[in-house]
Every structure is written in C-alpha cells, then in structure tokens.
Amino acid sequence: MDLANTAPTTRTFDFVVEERRGAPDGIEKRMLVVNGEFPGPTIETNTGDRIVVNVTNKLSNATAIHWHGLFQRNTNFYDGTAAITQCGIPPGESMVYNFTFDGWVGSTWWHAHAGTQYTDGITGALIVHGKNESVPAYDGDLAIQMADLYHGFSSDLLNLYFTPGGLEGTPGNEPVPDGGTINGIGQYGSSNGTFFNATLAPNKTYRLRLINTGSFVAMRFSVDGHTLTVVEADGTAVQPVVVSAVSVAVAQRYSVLLTTNGSAGAYWMRAALDQDAFTYDNPGVQTEIRGVLRYGVDDNVLPDVVLLDNPPSLPDGSPGDLDTDDLVPVGGGPAPDATFSVYFTISMQYAGGPNYLSQFLSFINSTSWEPLQGTSSLFAHLGNKTSDGSATYSDSQLITTVDEQHVVEFIIDNLDDGDHPFHLHGHKFWIVGSGAGRYQHQALDNKAPMLRDTLVIPAYTYTILRFVADNPGFWAFHCHIQWHMAAGLLFQVNVLPSESAKFDIPQYMLDQCARAKNH
Image (cartoon, rainbow, N blue to C red):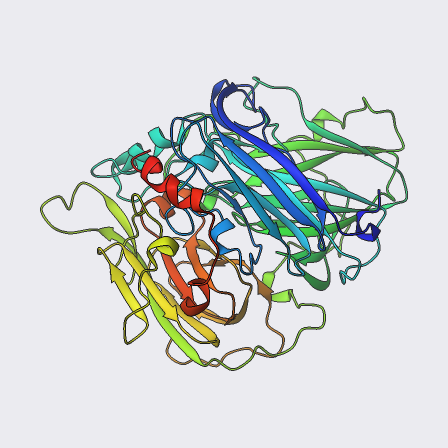
C-alpha cells in the first residue's frame, strides 16, 4: 500500500509490556518485550496521521515509552521520558500516548525510556511516510533494526558496571556485548543457524531503513556485492552519497537505496559490532551478525557459506564507508545565528566523598543526573525561577531554562576518552562545528550544516550544535549509551516554561506518580 498518498487518519495500537524468556541468537535469556515480540510492533504511518498507543505495563517496575526523534509539539508530556516528562506507568497500570508528527517524516524508532529497560528488548521501528519527502524514487521499503545483544539482564549488567574498581579492574569499563541481532535474529557460535532474510524483486530499488536500536556500540552495515546510496539521516533527507558500508551509531538512523541489479542469487547482509569500544576481552562474542537478501531465486536459497568469513570485495574504484562530513541536507543552508549559548563539558569520574570508590559516574559540568522519584521535571516545573536560566535541583538535575524563543547554541567539550552518541529530544540540531581538543573559538562550518537528532561526539573533541528552541517543555539531551545515561550523562532544556505551564496534562498521569515511585 502506498501510505504516503492515503488520507490522514488516526492509527491505534495496543502495547502490552511484559517479561518473557527468549533466545534471539540461540542463547535463552530474560527479556522485556512488547506484545511478546522482539523487536516489538512496527508503527508505519503518515506524517498527517494521529497515533494513539495504549500501553499496559505488566512488568514489576514502572516503564515509559519514548518516540525517538519526534517533536511532540505541545505534547511534551507524551515524550515518554521517565522522571522528565512523566513519572512512569506503574506496574499493572496503563497509559495512552496520543500525538501527531508536526511534519516529521522519515525513519525512527520507539523504545522504553526508564532505566536500562530497552536493553532487554523494549524497542521497535517507527516509519513515517510523506508525499513531499525529498528522497529519490524507490520501489520497496524494508526496515533493518540492528542492535548489540547481551545474554545477561540489564539491571545485573548495570550493577557490574558500577562494581567498585570497575569491570575487569578498570573504572568505567562498559559491559561488552555477547553479540547482536538483525531484526531480532542473531547467531551466537553454533547456537543459531537462522538469519533474518528477505526476498526482493530483481532490477528494483529498495529503501533499507537502518536503525541502531542497541545499547552501546555502533553497527557497520553492508551487503555483499552491492553499493548503498545514503538518502536520509535521522529524518533529514540528504543529497545522495554512494558508499560501500554505513556505520550507524546507537539511536541513529540512515536510509540507503539498494538496487537489485546484480546476478540473481542470495547475498549476505552484515551488521558488524564496533569493537573499538570494547575495553576487555569477552570470549565468544559474535562480532558480526548476518542476514540474507536474495532476488531472482527461490525463497529458500542461502548465500555461499564460504563467504561468511571471506566477504567478496567490491570492484576497484568502488566507494568506501560513509563519512558523515559528506552529509548535506537537501535544500540545506546556513543555520541561524545563535542568540543563547550554553557551554558544558562531558566527563566520567568518581563522585568524590567517602564512597568515591563505589561508583564511577558520568558528568555534564559538575552534575551527574539521577532520575527524580515520585515526580518529573515537567510536573514539578523545575528551574524556571532562576535569574540566569539554569538550575541545579537536588544536586542531580542540570536544567537550562530558555524562557523566550531563541536559537540555542550548545558548545560541548568532551573531556572523556570515549565516544558518546548524544540525542536531543523534541528537536533537530545543526552541527556547525567540531574538531580535536577543546573549543577555543575555532572557525565554524555553517555553509550547509547537517541537521539531525543524534550525533557522535568523539573522545577529546569539541562539538557546536544549534537548534531553534520554540517547542515548549522539558527536553533531555543525553548520551544514548545505556550505561552512560544510567550513570548520569543527561542534561535538560526547559523551553518556554510560560507555555508548558498551560499544558492540559491528563490527571491520571499525575496520579501515577505516587504509585510509580520506587518501582
């Protein structure tokens, strides 16, 4: 069905969140899933539609579902960010998310935004079609959800991450994954011989929507014998870039066009975990996940297994991996001049004090975020009475208030030795500068900067972002590595508090706060 040309409508979904046993890569494990599926249901919709999702929580802890990248204009309370825009859905209770897209078009995903729950499986694709999307024509559409995978349960892994002295004796060592999945299917050693597979028509062009729904590492996607043409990143149409592979950081999305004009047959699709982020050896880790794309042959044909560990090379002169510096928005131009500037640093360190050996935490400036209990930033309306627009609340909430419409500039120095994929809720930002070392007023590149919602801030570098703060509410800006966010790597922007004070927040969401506390 050509969704882009259908009339606007209301699409209703029922999500039941519960704990199940599953074995995505052949090793049985505890999982948290929606409707008994991993990944959960794909929401496919039109930019003019309204989405209504009734979420029932059958977990033993409170939960919340975040709709990644969406603007949620005037519905900040449906952003689904526990302790910031809601208190969470208490165990045994339900909540209805009800929102529109405000012109947002492209490829994204939904996931739990409470603790580290999405690591255990609460994720799914969210595809938004639009008549006027500025991408080349294509014949078919396929969502490819890639994720790293842990055999352990995330709360147990988080406790290991916080081990005094650190995992394997080094503070800040993140748990190394055991493998990964493509659309919910992985291969761990000889435990699973099945692959996500799709049969396509020959001599057609398909849009593969690559989504990294993982918790820690980037995934490098490629298809043997084929080049890929990048046409979208995080809901922004880009001038086409032909590549051999795309590295997708945690929470990022890319659309690539693949043309089925090779020899009829089956081809390995590969999603390789970025091992540069591994800080210790995890014996048995499956570092490359495989799937199958085929055309012009029967549905049961598999590629040559000899090629599994010996991928064929593309012809001489073929393009290399995507360089994000080559991304230019369709119709892009300079970002507006900044009218409001915020400087902050990213660091990882012991918190100090008598228990300094207990937890190695993440900091933005001198604040390590901890979720509020029994309320949320939006419900408490924190930080909106300070003269300088910033407030630290109970030493764990760093909030900058923007009380009139501004072009906000984030000047960020990453003082840490790791790369951090940062995501801004409710907005897209222009990337107007980046480079090695600290920011010391280096020249910016504002000719046609990329506009997106998730970017990697590499180790020991600076990044300058700008966005138009005209969307009322409390919006998180945080590292999407689940271990880092749990350790406090989150900052909040309180945009137009005089407008968000007028929100008509459903009373039952406020009533859920007392029952969600300590769950």
